Image 1 (cartoon, rainbow, N blue to C red):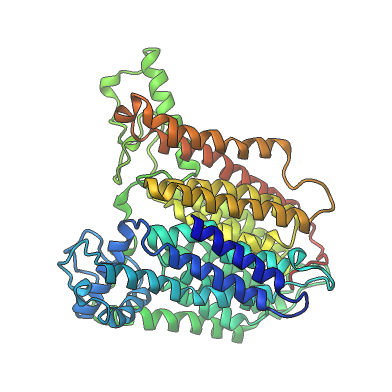
Image 2: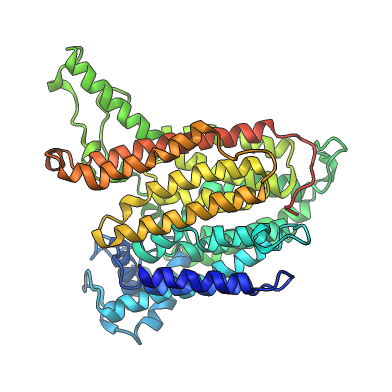
Length: 539
């Protein structure tokens, strides 16, 4: 903790020493500072995802391509699209210089010091893509000249992205490559904001072939490009001018997307393995919810079902012997039946997800509102999929938080929504780090990020009153007693052994209320915003 505090002090001093001109030295100070922080976390706790990626390094290095999606020595089989498999293949050729034993498939749970060092460094170095993407996103902001550094939207956005609490703990403690992937996403968004739509479409196609979870936001991309790029003109009132449709642009976009998928999936199609690859990418037998419920609508649905079953038995309206076993409260990754409410199928979640994003898609088709409208639609697609999707991981909320950061420095209303969503969602990630030694780290880093977010956005939008109303402030303050109960009080009670999943359930349900509220506020903002284009910081 002392090393982290000293690092932050050095970063702040370097940033404040940067000239208040067009000099971007503050950006490199922030990037370098967060990189040093990541290095300090190399020996921190890592989750099973560390072994997942070690196994993928081993199988892509040791086995022929034809066996990649069949290999099952480890339970952590390859379930990402082919481009990410090739990314692991490339990393494996560097990994052999650190420790060749990590590349042996049967060496399950292998984690030598050299292996840990390599995998941690691979995430840190891959974040260079994220740094570049953030810099490009900052170029899409218009800034008032003469403002000091702490009042510049580009500076605030850089900190909100580079020092994002969720990315720090998920990638550099828990262990994943989200920074690299979000770098591709943000770079794609930046290219669309810069009217470089072919590049943006190509980058997003690459992203889909790196991690298919980004299919959640594909509808926003598809509708936006069709409406704002393939149709080259709009009427004076902003409505669609049908005669302006460009077949050439549509063909070029289609060629870019299909070519990317052909390169990615082509070898496996030639081997006749496409069904096997798809079965790995979309494993619907994992159940509605993950082991730790993501804070979405299904967490509220599950708790409602549990409450109804308890009340039904208590008032003798239900026979306890006829109720299906409610395994959903045991923290298991599997299919289960709800006790009272109808059980939810993958098809039902798909329908709910589509219904949740259709108004946003209709809005962007009817009145696009430029890059801001596209971003808002993208965030709603990400959040709608998180709220209603099948077997959603709690980490998927980052897909909404990071793009929303761009809107937060552009609009006072969006800044308030960002604060609600980011604080709630970041706290919902706390259960990922359950070890004692990581407790002060996660609390300190979240407090640091939250305080900066509140202070910087309040300074940026100092005119117009508070960003959060009293009810919202009360809800967020409620996270403090929730943390005290779950982390310090409950483990001392007799219920710890009987109901070990209860703290996770409380965290999930409480955070689900906040995420749902933010989703509703975002939708209200979308549907009530003026159709006329207003002056905005975003180009």
